[in-house]
Image (cartoon, rainbow, N blue to C red; front, side, top):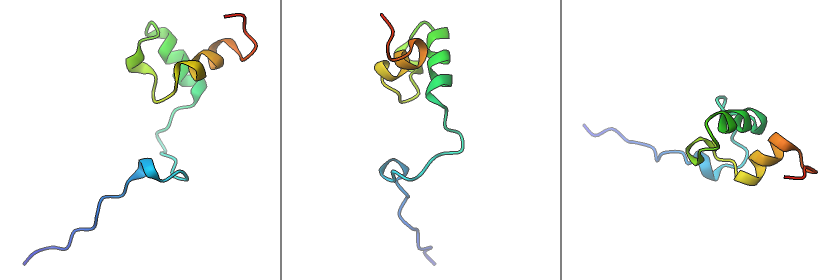
Length: 61
């Protein structure tokens, strides 16, 4: 007998879904900086978001 399978839920399309394992931009920025600003460690944030978290929005950088 075949089991009915439900379609997979697309969490990326659900703007209200927040994963319990999500990381704040501040924590992501620290991890990113500690790893030499490697693009593999952006945790889904843009470079601009990470730099703003590290240096502040009004930084001279």
